[in-house]
Image (cartoon, rainbow, N blue to C red; front, side, top):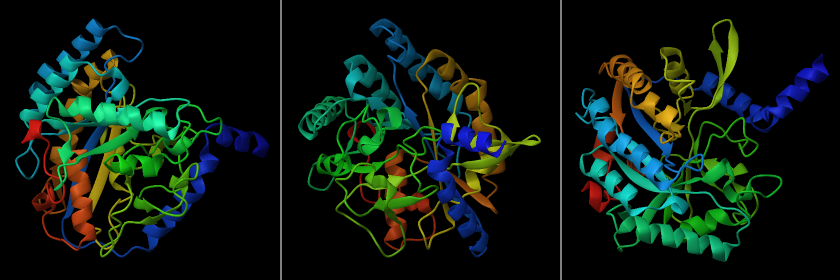
Length: 370
């Protein structure tokens, strides 16, 4: 029986992250209590793939139009503590570039409903072929007013890896091929990676529930397995920041479920799930009152879109605005991936108080959202 249980756990790749999760639970148990209200920095990072399931261009356009017209209708009734509506981060796949799709997302950005970042599915690449794909995507997106620029005018972007295979993370090398991907991402302007968690996928790292800097040999396969927790007083400006969403074991009725921060039509937001997202208290060490909650989804496919733009999305934002924005225990801030990064850097630089003041701390909004 014990052997069977262990085999089942390995099939779900629990062995890759449960030790790290146990360390995280222990850390939380020993952490001092946080006094006063806690600020919730909430971001939905969407692997936004209009052509998912081999859809043709016309079907993809209908999916994008559903979001262009439907998202404002859904979220306009909700506001965070700063008076802002929910803000969606559309990680758009470079290989699915269609001008009309990016124009529609630019309209959402102009309305204050979110921003576009970079997603990419690739396989069997070298550093040179991957770099060419990334630079092409940056050029394509910038034509539509997407992506921020730094003080030197250089395009900057957040990234989510297709099929979770960051830094050639699969044992078989599929869906990437480039061990040195993290330095390459940084070289092309990436400021933060938002790929993880990916459990139960085999690419899931042993580091969980953290904002952290990768350390060690950054040209090594799965170099994201080694890192140092982001903390007040230390900013590494020569590498990509890794921003994780919550992962762990949570109660479900009389049983236990795997919570890995995915919003789906089959697994929408509930009060119990929201509680499990806040439980890890992901933060920059030394600033525990700023809690970072990064969820992910695949919002373009029809069933997923119908849920996120319908009852599933309504339930999510009703829970957040009624349970986590009372001004005494919780203060809610809807943020994009770029804003989440800016606030994390502000925390590392010793900033405190209201994180709303630091949404544009390092990187300004892209032209489409300005």
